[in-house]
Amino acid sequence: MRLSRFFLPTLKETPTEAQIVSHRLMLRAGMIRQHAAGIYNWLPLGTRVLQNIIQIVREEQNAAGAQEIIMPTIQSGDLWKESGRYDDYGPEMLRIKDRHERDMLYGPTHEEVVTDIFRNNIKSYRDLPKNLYQINWKFRDEVRPRFGLMRGREFLMKDAYSFDINYERSKHAYNQMFVAYLRTFARLGLKAIPMKADSGPIGGDLSHEFIVLADTGESAVFCHKALLEKPAPSNVDYEADLQPIIDDWTSLYAATDDKHDPAMATTLGGDLVSARGIEVGHIFHFGKKYSEPMKANVIGPDGSPVTVMMGSYGIGVSRLVAAIIEASHDEHGIVWPESVAPFDIGLINLKVGDPDCDAACKKIHDALCLMHKDVLYDDRDDRAGVKFADMDLIGLPWQIVVGPKGVAKGVVELKRRATGQKEELSFDAAVAKLTVM
Ligand code: ATP
Ligand code: MG
Image (cartoon, rainbow, N blue to C red; front, side, top):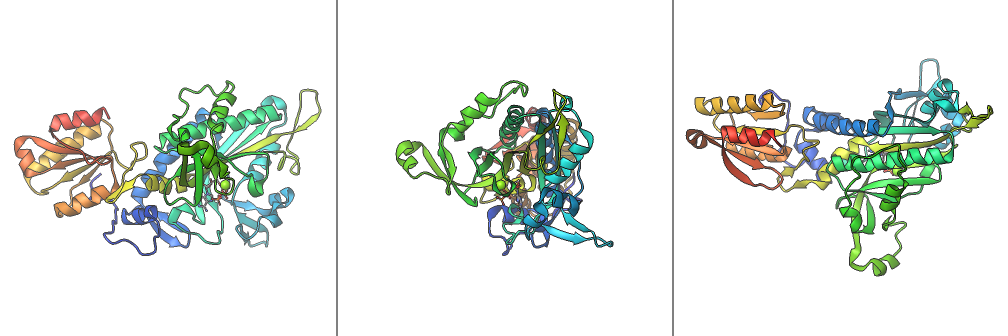
């Protein structure tokens, strides 16, 4: 992609409305623009990151046995009257009347809709287990939308819903999502810590939040430092008993400030980490809370109806973009983990119009594209300082700098964004090195 053609409205000045670093950097890097309070447009650079995150979330959901569906964003109020939540949900729910004066709403969550899909289509215990998920926009009319994507009103969520015949199977579905979450966040380059949570307004008896540590997090968190070093499970057999993995992750102390036991500071001593955190995921097991009032029954093994057990599992996909930036940036801008970076490589031509520089860039660009690398080629006729600053700001993992002096010697400079480390390499060596990355 040529930067001269790419829609990348970067800003030199720090926007005054942005209070936290991820919001500032997303605006400055031309990733998003606000449309209305808590509602954003995603520009091409932001969209590319969001799509990369979506893909990782999707792959890990699929691997854990969940199946992707798409539910409507606009829902009928009738289902919510059935579950009893229509009046309970409060002003966070955006209520709409259609032209026939019917009660509609913009979905803040989808338990009712998915339970309706289930009960209309699944009739026997033999069809269980089922886990359905979507990656879709939610609307919650938050009192104080703030911090950009961190607490928006419209935001992208992955929400999965499991259906099982009994508690034991339902707990297994919960454990599958728990493990999938550990793997998902690790692939996104994040350290996410599971914390036992209240099940909140959705209700239930088993719940964990996944918290990413970052200085600007909304909640204070305390945990055993060994949790921060634990690698996510690799090569998981999702059919096997996952309880030992869950026990291993939940046996170490971790709490948000409301549940923190101050005595732990003495007990754990130097092993206690106190930090701030961002909630990026939340899983609930809530049993029959919706299946009971909505009559989601199947025929059980003995021929009599059984009310199914359910759980729901959310990931704040758009919030993750901000959380990743909070966890990975420096004074020059964003430092993307390779797995989500909008492009793999930024190619900077220091002297556009110089036939040798142009030819070297074209050669490198084409070679990298052949190797299926995403390259953003800065071919703008602009000052070197502007180009370096923009490239650091948008945070691509690698930069190749092509200038007349180097080209005369047959070399380019390769820079790793995360460390700032630079090396001079021949064109071919630079391409070869990036190809194996
Ligand atoms: P919070 O406690 O932050 O208000 P919640 O408990 O209401 O969130 P859930 O219903 O558990 O949120 O939603 C699942 C995930 O969606 C959360 O873990 C969070 O990452 C994300 N999320 C929730 N509300 C917002 C929002 N207003 N903007 C962006 N992401 C959100
Ligand atoms: Mg929550």
